[in-house]
Image (cartoon, rainbow, N blue to C red; front, side, top):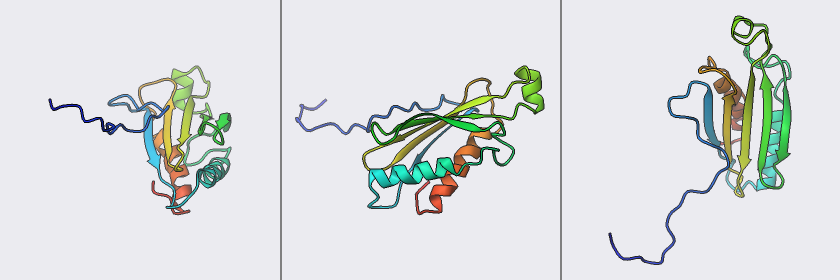
Length: 150
C-alpha cells in the first residue's frame, strides 16, 4: 500500500434505502434521475405527482387493495414510504395468506440533487410474480414522460 495522501476517499453517497437481497425475487431497486437542472423541491413535486396519480384500484392486475402513504418527509430528510396491498382475491392470497391481501412497501429517498433511490419489496414470500417490478415500472414511466432518466 502507498502512503496516505490526505485526499478524501471516493465514497458513494449514503442512502437509507437497503439494496435488495442477492437473488431476491420479491424486491426491486432502482435509481431515477430528474432532468438536468431540476431542484430537489421540483423533483419532490414530480415524485409526489407520480405517486398520487397511481390508481387506488391498482393497475396491470396488481395493487387492487389500494395504497396509503405511511411516511412523508420528502421536503425534509427526503424520505417517504408507501404501503400497497393486493386485492386478496387471488388464489395465492387465498391459499398462502389466509385470504388476506399481501402487503408491499415502497421506500423513496430524494437526494439534494433530486436523484431518487427507490426500493419496492414484499413483506412475505420468496416471489412476488413481478408485482414490485410492475409498480416501480408504472411510476418510472410517469416520470420518464417528464424527461426523467429511469
